[in-house]
Image 1 (spheres, rainbow, N blue to C red):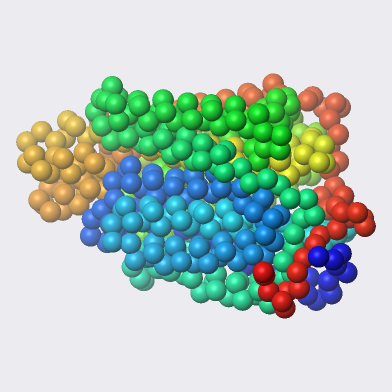
Image 2: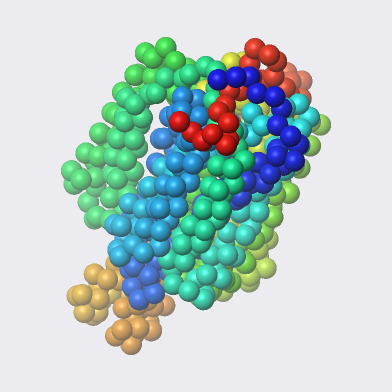
Length: 532
């Protein structure tokens, strides 16, 4: 192990290109599934998945990502970030192949969870390699360029998924990952040194097991609540109780560890803790409203996958504009007067779904999505930067792990709760229309609006399909109300916990060469020698 000289500039640029391809791959996968949900729910074109199974197909990925990411960073320190990165790409590509050819919803859920494992190994290593490769002003420029991959993925994902679903079978949205991952793997092995941190972090297997068990049990109970008629059933309340107990034990266990991977003590900092709670609530709301949006555009309005993908572009464009705009506004006004109104506006746009219907003009939907993306972009970037900069430098890594875990957990619970509210409200709304319908058709129609539309076609009863559309719109309105309350709660938390203007240091220089110096240089094995 030796202290490396700076890499040649051309090689640095090629490494950045490889990292951007990998980041784009992750962001594409995060967005394509939402476009495919309606197809997966279709009994003919997809898997006939019910809402609970679709919640798991979305949530299993996020859950695995959330609970493994902080452990993956420690693995990179120990075995080399290129080694962990390569393993993540292999797992991601292999599980994408399994997802593409899944024979039922259960296989798809398992494959999506494995894809989450791959992403969890990729993401911390990707960021670590970026920080080790570039120093000084070059790091600032590299981070700025690298961050554009998120916006490109957000914008291109739904359109790419729409094109594939319009021309191929649903598995193509996962199969496309395989050649991209293979290309990235070759570039990684040829160009990137096997960077390692000089300081090894302990592997927190106990914390990982408790967090996975707690979140899986909690999510299972919340999703199951939407699939049954009585919440007094043990298979609803028991998993929720077990999940909460395991998560409490996880927090207590992390408090006893000298160097925890997830440090709950950081949440005791007023700004850091409050900001993370607010971001968790925002991501809860975003995940839930995105889940609704997929079924609204393709199911209720009858958009093709390509049309739905194009309709979602304003959200991505708004986020792309909102992130740099938010940074500039924060430099002028400070964080609280920018983030609190922006999060409030984001919450109100989610409440706007309560006014959407079967005959809402497309231009109104597009304006709503554009404003929503803009407001969310203004909040997330500046608040995240402020949270990390609020901590001492030696706690920045631990703070990043906490922030990412809280955000992903918010998404998991948002999908579980949002989908459950939708299922319950839909079943209650569709019930009056099922009078006189054959019993088997009644059971199918109660599952989801997609199943009801298919049943209506089978028995040639268009009125049932119309009733399913109306029931879904009612369910979306009910869910949007609850989601708005959650997002507004996040705005209130920011208002209370963020310091007022004048009490906050706003200038946070990304790329400040804080990791430089002879005493804190990265260690790596030669890229040509391979990992050992």
